[in-house]
Length: 74
Ligand code: FES
Image 1: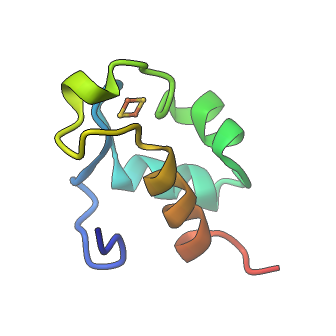
Image 2: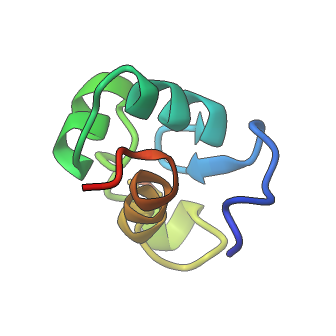
Image 3: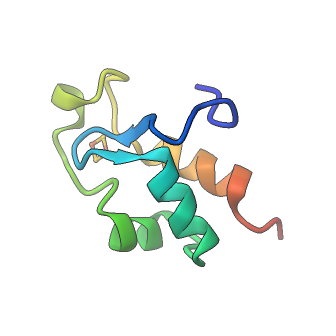
């Protein structure tokens, strides 16, 4: 998944229907880790990932990747 190239509408979390734009906005708003993203957007709290996510797994790796791309570099 190349998150840099994906449009804002691409879904990150299928359980909670949260798209890339929402996650990136939370990161720009100061979310620094997966937990903060979960609290702010509800992404990553679904638990029905195998069933709902066509990637066949939870969205946590995608959230981490977005944090790496759009978060502040330490
Ligand atoms: S896809 Fe995000 S919690 Fe399931």
